[in-house]
Length: 323
Length: 291
Image (cartoon, rainbow over all chains, first blue to last red):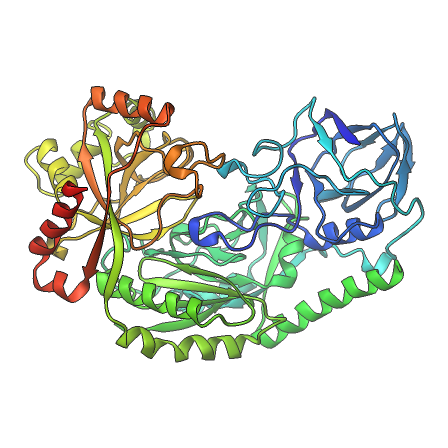
């Protein structure tokens, strides 16, 4: 069974849950930006939760099926069609051999996950099928999908139509989106006033927002505690001796525009980081469009772990619903 | 040196050995990150050593953040008492300085540079007090370098020169990063040299290019058959200046699978190095020449 790509959309790539264990060589985890949505999509079609799916941003692809399969689309609201007939999101449906899956225009959110029964079975690179174009790893020859690609799948027909994730379990960011942040790392570089201002101000997602990182604009510039810059750090007060970056860490080059590093993050560099978005909220960033309003909310470790537990609990409830 | 421990979100422990760069801080970070690896702590998923710091990624569903933090802290004394000795390799990396490709690129991005009227090498020579670009190039390649971190993007090494602090070359990054850097550019920013493993954005000054591939996801290049990334922290590098003819010859040899990098195994002892830097370097270079 193959998926014939008639139109790839804007930037559609094969993603799973990523490759662990190579960040010390500069190769990031990668994988779905909204891992929750990817897991849910796979559950709906009867796959392993980490099977490879298509992640499409802002625009959907157009795909012809060579065999009948169960399909589910989760994440952003992007109306789904099979041979022109609308299908429900977060719910499994059947695409028959010869039919074409396509999409209308984006209504909300940013990324959809298209799971196909049997999963996409392109070759793994370092234990994952996730596409990391900078390092030419995974995906189709290390790149996003293109017109004319034929993607192999596991080929099973799957559990069929009508399996659904109930409305309260369809996780998405609020308005304005709230991203919970655990201060740490180089937080001490900021003045008290700047630290408070970061959480008080409303920020907007900048156009420079992709799988490597999301940039934010609109808050007040951050002031740094005065110091003589350490040897090897560089002259700007936002510089440090190049160190590792955490996933979700927030760097603010020059103190002006915060950047949250995401799944295809660079593994290190010379900018101070003020803390990191908690693991439970990383999925939500993947659903933010440019110009979306965002508030950063300060939390402590206990709250971060509670949020992580809550997200896990929601996934467990989806599993129960779909037994 | 004062060690600082902090969390990066709920999945990372971040340890900074010192806020300034030094070989002592690098050695301590390398030996402590090795101690964490050797401790095989359940729930640890990634250990990333950097120049003067390191990071441990963990799964908080397996080990509680306070527990992993306590375990990492316990290992600090091990790093302090560890021998500052490393069995490693010294590698000769050929560099075509003042090559036409980085030159074309640096001219294209001149408005982002501190000195729009010269090249990156002109600027670096001037601000480091060298009379000529050739003198500066000699300072860059005459003494060896330590790979103190691998990262940023896939397989990119950061290198720190094995000379006294007052002899360290220092240059700022571009005022605003370039959107393009040729693959295998030898770059410089702060006190670090680097090799761009892939083509892409970059902010380091550009000095030249090496014909020796250091990252190959397809693992077709002979010296990258075993693993796609060439460098690891602790490697020692000696730059070897080459001209266009040698550059072309190496590119051709890489292409037909006959290129073998020159590598020798060496012992590096930090105390010995600190007592006699030039003597220690000379010994390592001798080993390389015999290889």
